[in-house]
Amino acid sequence: AQSVSQHNHHVILSEAASLELGCNYSYGGTVNLFWYVQYPGQHLQLLLKYFSGDPLVKGIKGFEAEFIKSKFSFNLRKPSVQWSDTAEYFCAVRTNDMRFGAGTRLTVKP
Amino acid sequence: EAGVVQSPRYKIIEKKQPVAFWCNPISGHNTLYWYRQNLGQGPELLIRYENEEAVDDSQLPKDRFSAERLKGVDSTLKIQPAELGDSAVYLCASSLAGTGDYQYFGPGTRLTVT
Image 1 (cartoon, rainbow over the protein chains, first blue to last red):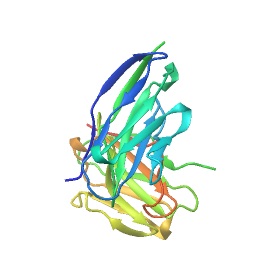
Image 2: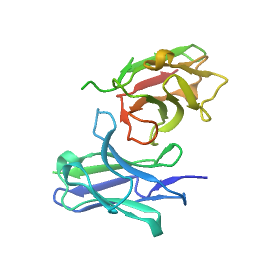
Image 3: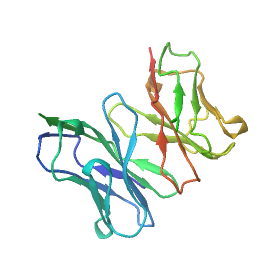
C-alpha cells in the first residue's frame, strides 16, 4: 500500500543550526511531492512542491528539498534555522490522491 | 484573496450526538477535499469533490459520515451519530484544477466527543 514515512517525530535545534527532515514514500509511479508547514495556531501552508524538472526545489523562507527518485525520498533542508521556524512539517505525496506523513515537530531554541 | 473558510472552529459534543462542519472553498476552486487529522498524525483524506460530484469517497466511513457539496461551492460534512474515536481536527482544502494543483487548507474544526 502507498505510504509516506517521516523519520523524525520531534527535532530540537538551536538557532543557526542546519536542518534536514527525511521523507520517504512507497510508490513506484509518477508522483507529485509537497512539503507543508503548520505554525502554532495556524493552518497548513505549502512550503514547496515538486512536479517535474530540476529535482532540487526551492521554497519559501529559505527552505529547499531534493527529490531522489532512486531512493524514493524528498528530504527537506534549510542551512540555518530561526526560532520562527518552530512548527510541524508534513511531507505529502500525490498520485491519485494525497497521502501525508505523520509530521515532524521542529523546535528551534533561541 | 480570501482563504478556505471553515466553521465552527471548535465543537464539543457528547457521543451519539450529530455534528456538522461547513466549508467555503477559495472562489473558483473546483476541487474540494475533506480530511481528518488525528493527534500526532498527518491529514487523511475522507472525500474529494470535483464540482458537486464526489469522485473519491473510499475512505469515508459511510455508516455514520456523510458529505454534500450542493451547487459545487460550499460543502458540509456530517457525522451521525458521533463516537469517541471521531475526536480529531477536520480539515477542508480546495484546489484550482482537479488533482493537478496544490491544495489550500482551511484552519480546521477541532471536534471533541465526550
